[in-house]
Image 1 (cartoon, rainbow, N blue to C red):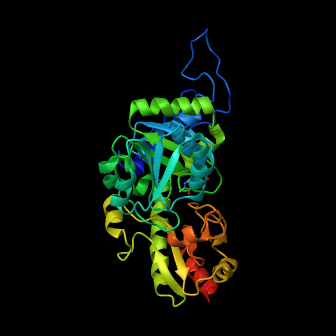
Image 2 (cartoon, rainbow, N blue to C red):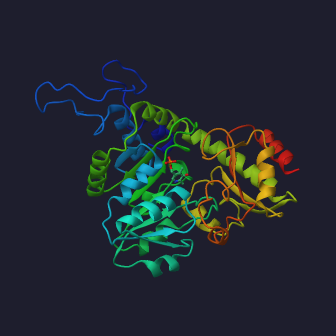
Image 3 (cartoon, rainbow, N blue to C red):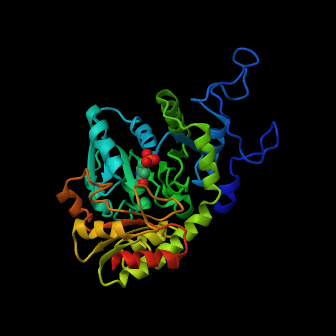
Length: 377
Ligand SMILES: *Cc1c(COP(=O)(O)O)cnc(C)c1O
């Protein structure tokens, strides 16, 4: 099946008991056994629940993997990956990444003796320089947040040695990019974003191909217990059915907005991997099927105040954290998502004071451009 069909059908069967075409919300913690040890595949809902099971099978299929697992949030999914490691193990990560990932690395897992190294992963030679025999995990986010840099997944596969390569695929979605096909070992999602797609659920997910790795991760999922409830799984199953339609429109609208921004006299730089002038455009073209709805831009007047003024004056673009929902959002990394990163480090990675990040929604494009034109004026 092609991705558009898999999104709707993979892993999903009509309900055996009733024929319900939509996977029921199995709001139950436990399952009656006919005798000790004899059950219908479900024993206790932390271990497995039928609604979550359908979603896990669907996620595995749409990422071209074999095993899917869902977590209570994207952070809980990252947490599960890090629990594969032992004290003394090293992790190599991109220096331009989701603030929450940076925080769990440096303030939680660093305490347990795991060593984190941050490099500019758009240059493979820099990654290669810091990989040692102790490197057990390479953490890639592509496109990165909020600079939209693109990291060459296949290139990292060639130099990763014994380390697991994990890719945060939240921004791209499996409709635009399937990292397992380029040799990644683990794909991670904040399903809160494009997979759910409607800003009504918080969830995380992992997909892997390899059985032993899946067994380890299922063990961590069941032992640590950071699982989502069945109602949230239902919402994400429903969201995924329209992922292709939404992402196509997100990308279409983003491209028009990028053209508008490039030609606006107050705008300095525009970051979107679909631009032929984007520094990693060639790699984006190679590993992505489209360029998505995330756009960042800076202002010629590079101040926090100038950016805040624009944020205050949009009406359709809602000022909020998060991304990937059907509605357009606007945010200011320097004072919102990336506020915990020291200014010098932040500016060096491109997150200047005036940088604004858009999650372009699926509204009418003329309305969205009018909204930005007004705010910029
Ligand atoms: C939101 C996000 C996360 C964290 O996911 P939550 O569901 O908020 O816990 C991780 N990575 C990226 C790229 C994100 O955008």
